[in-house]
Length: 229
Length: 220
Image (tube, rainbow over all chains, first blue to last red; front, side):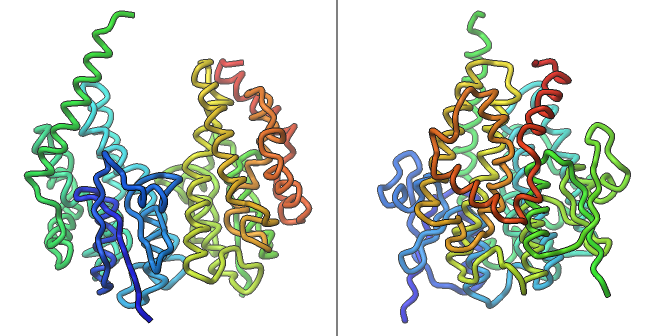
């Protein structure tokens, strides 16, 4: 029976990249469908009417959306090279840390990048506090998954690439090697791991994209603050 | 060796109630400890140092936080009775998707209705809230439960919000039954289950609680 696996993604989405990594780590053949998110295809809107976002995995014609949901589906359907641990408590811990990375780490680091002035200062403080928890969690481990890359590593993986891009654009340190030595070395190990390293989007294109996002954010915040009350 | 299960929660929390429903579905005995969120216990701070929030399940001394993560853990450990997630991976993915939708949307939008001081924010909140409920109602379709024939994972994630419906209606000046009759019928069906009725707090007591918090926050 033929397996048809399609992944709707964009060239830069860090969320879709998680799924690229998962599929390739497990050796699953798939077709990548690149979307222009400023001009979403009718197929994308049909497959993900609720959120209208990438990634979407379409397996034998059936769509699944939301990267965490897709990762668990992939792990349950293709059992080679497991991403989540077997033990229920360890699985709960992996899910906990993944949620923490998404809700707290990603949010605070994004704010530290996109905001200015006092809001940026506060975001940097929040980011550092969140990173401390991750640093502690890394003790005695090469990856969050242990000896090899697992679910939490894939969820946090964007950090290993985007942080240096953000730091270059804003000229500020977000993940200080001295303060977070374990996390910093995880970032190097993860970024250079086989399969991971082959799939990073082009750095120069990323810098252009995120510089433009920052410029737009600065422009809109200064225009709203200059308008009179 | 008997399992030792402790639940740290607060009685009005729709998140804590989810865990109570799951434990009841599995017929599990546990110790319930009411937390005072204005004065958190050392145990809570020790068991959930990252978020310092409830609910926290402590199973044989080991803590798990985040309500739907706890529910999934309970379902995996006590998998011989009343399964909450289906066995098929695609159906499991659909259940996780909708539980995630409830988590991402309903609570934060609902906050605009109850805790907001600005009229415009509250109006937006009302509109978005009803849109969410209508989408969920559409997903339920003609099934008795979100889990199909059986009460399941998505049912657990959503049914505990029903105790708060009266409060949303009161402060939002809306009628959920008028807007989403099938969804309200589903909440009544769920309440016929002992696991749900014994776990949900009384809607009027929740309303009184919300009123007290609003006074404390200076918005009532």
